Length: 208
Ligand code: HEM
Figure 1 (cartoon, protein in one colour):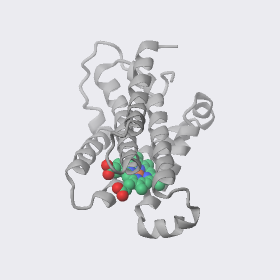
Figure 2 (cartoon, protein in one colour; figure 1 turned 30 degrees about the vertical axis):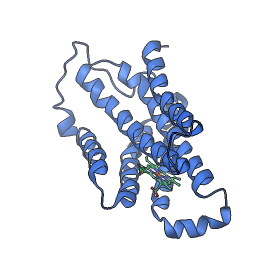
Figure 3 (tube, protein in one colour; figure 1 turned 120 degrees about the vertical axis):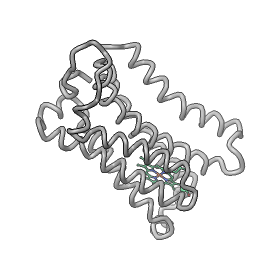
Figure 4 (tube, protein in one colour; figure 1 turned 135 degrees about the vertical axis):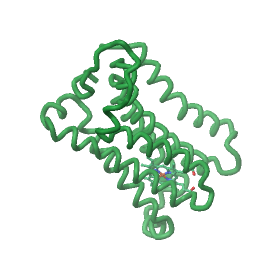
């Protein structure tokens, strides 16, 4: 296994946040509506994880270090895990597991449909993120995983629908997401300077 310490650091950094929020909830430190705070924090955590995952390829190009690509899959799976926790927190704390209310909720909060589409996209990426699927799908794997940019767009739309007027936080995420998308445009990607002295490696060939 390559870069075990770096992998472990990424693992710790990703799992410490949900544990911290859960501890805060247990200690009654999340205010009068801890369930809603948990839903929001897990949602923002998912968006941050998605953006961090998308930083890995440009960082590899910039530094020439393949460690970034080695943790990329793990971070993507963490993003999926955060979305699942976000969904569970919503079903438990906001819906109260009252399935009969789901139809009313979807009419009241149509942005949930947008979030659900993003979740389905993330599920497709998560189940095909292993090396077996990569080998089986060949060139189609790369195409399928470009879906991540659609998922980012859906996540941002979902968030925008919720914040509406207070756009400060949303704008920060949208600008970072927009820059990361620009960096994948081939003519711009080619111009990323290389700071590291090591040879460039193919980002799809590096083992996950
Ligand atoms: C089945 C899927 C999803 C459901 C049911 C869902 C539901 C919700 C709900 C109920 C809220 C709280 C809205 C409010 O403040 O009243 C929320 C907020 C949020 N969700 Fe989702 N969501 C889903 C998927 C996603 C995905 C895929 C992402 C990102 C990749 C995401 C990111 C966010 C963010 C950033 C917020 C705002 C947090 C804040 O206000 O601080 N959600 N979501």
